[in-house]
Image (cartoon, rainbow, N blue to C red; front, side, top):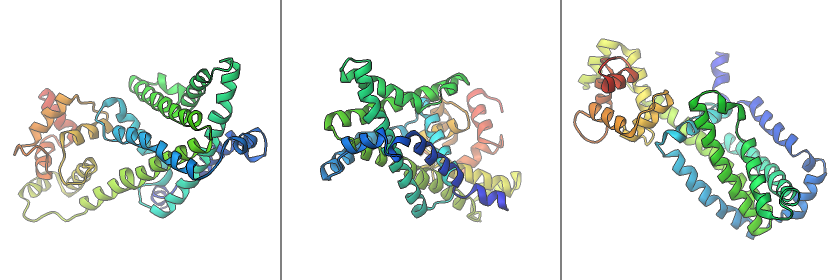
Length: 328
């Protein structure tokens, strides 16, 4: 149907909107105004700038990787919102070449615009107007401005969970902005943070699309469509009780949670996945759930064990509630 095809395709209007926002923010770059003058005067693209720009991404990608693999409830919302943003942009189907091209354009334009505006223009303006020439004052205020404009201020007041998510995003953007700021001050070359910023954005969007969204969804879909193993007594038992559709949904939910794609669920994978469904388990609670489901004490939950665990209640939410509170 047209609705299903549009939901699975690249969202061109949203991509154009994002580009238009950057064009508007950096209007004086494209029209030959003050932004263009700043870029020409302070950005010097050479081999040294490329090497330093690439090196600048290393600590940022290390932090990004730590956040992606963390089971902390403080970053779970951040990971989920990133996945949803990329899903909305590029859809659930892997398109490595097309998405690489689009992401390269988005990341490059964003790097040029935001570094010119925040580091090339805001940093010296704050330094002179608020810091009386003190560059650290300029760095502080330009970084705070960068961070605040990369969050949704109204989101802080929606709910306690939204407050935590937005606070985490604010801290992350302060760290990112401070990194870009340091690179500019240390090298006195605007090209360095531009390259770092563009590479960081490219990695975030492209890797999220290819691995965390499309890769994971295709893996789950593929496993869910696998024919039921005729020798699996457990699968037959719950198919007879709950039906083929329930079994397919159970398979898909299991393999969506299986982020390392090894065919089993670890305690960490289970805990992180439950965040996505609004169930916030402590580490001790997630260990209790894992023990209840891991009947052979192997240290992880295979699909048969998962079926036996969620089957009686009919869903993972009810199964977890029964484990922790003794009722469905």
